[in-house]
Structures are given as C-alpha cells and as structure tokens.
Image 1 (cartoon, helix red, strand yellow):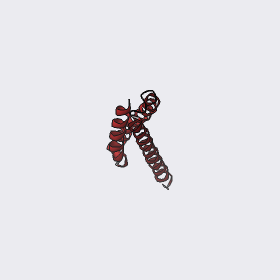
Image 2 (tube, rainbow, N blue to C red):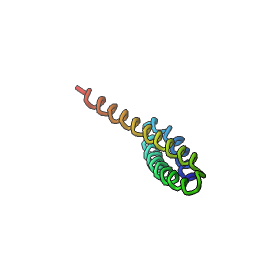
Image 3 (tube, rainbow, N blue to C red):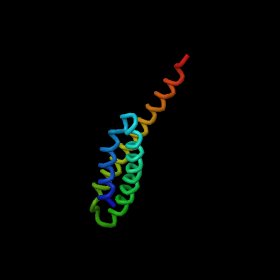
Image 4 (cartoon, rainbow, N blue to C red):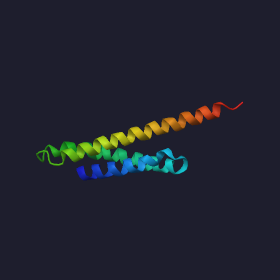
Length: 94
C-alpha cells in the first residue's frame, strides 16, 4: 500500500500540473483528482499497517498521503479559479 500511495501521488502531481491548460487540463484534472484521492486512501491505510510492521514503509505512506493531499488542493484551487473566471466572464456581458 505504501508504494502504491507514493507512486500514485507522484503521478497525480505530475498530471495535475496540466490542469491549468483549458481543454486538456480538464481531463488531466479529473485524472489527477482520482489519483490524488487514491493516494490519500492508500497512504492512510499504509500508515496504519506500517505500525504492525515496526514502522516499515511509514515514510513512503506519509509522503503519498501528503503529496495526494497537495494534489487535491491544487486541483480544487484550479477548479475554483476556473469557475470564478467563468462566472466573472459571463456576468460582464452587457
């Protein structure tokens, strides 16, 4: 679980960087969001299971958890900017 969390988080943050671009960014944001959620889930599971293994993989689980949360934050902020930009553009017509 810890390796999966870290790998998903790294890929999610790399794909999440494309969320700024208008058309491909929408698909990238959706893909990164799903991977970010999975990274957070696997990181939490990996952290809880690492206690039974004497702390083995605890750092990888924590890194996956943190990077997954950062990815989710980036995606949510980008979505808010897109929504606010769309609303501001739509309301400024006369």
